[in-house]
Length: 234
Image (cartoon, rainbow, N blue to C red):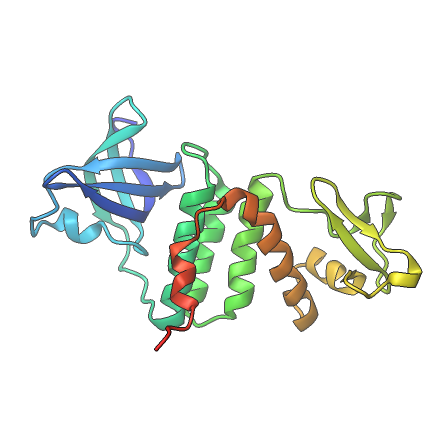
């Protein structure tokens, strides 16, 4: 790592001692890594101006401990323009990646999904689809994304007209006919998600599933980025 350049984005930074920052990077080659950026907190250096979220960087890190030292940083492309709701969503994506991705776990799939999410948000794409696709990528990397095509109890294909409930650590199981539709997930929505299709119905299903599946990974500490979406009391 001492001489290798890493493709990176800043997920978060926080003050460290009087003059430095600890920066959480998300890198293609080494996954999530934290590093000390020494002496840049009160400076007007290029290094400080580059240590902002939503900009593709190349960084060099040194050190053998889990907390590295930032030795070099350079810009690969201009900062991705994000404002309003798109900015809040991008902050959510950053916080989710920082909270869920284990330190040092490289993932081409999650890194590519991360870049695609930022670009989609900057282009005013469908926010719900953008967030669900990134959440799916995280869940897939963690081995928690369910099979949308199979009834795990009977080992039968999901039926378009069926209704299913989700069993944690297992998958989808068809509900008895006399209670189908009560609180189940429609088979047609599950099959749409299996094909990567986000219809109005499959969007609702995906949102509920992601909320439930991500909860154990996020833990009890609330996500700060979610507070940005809450209406402010007067």
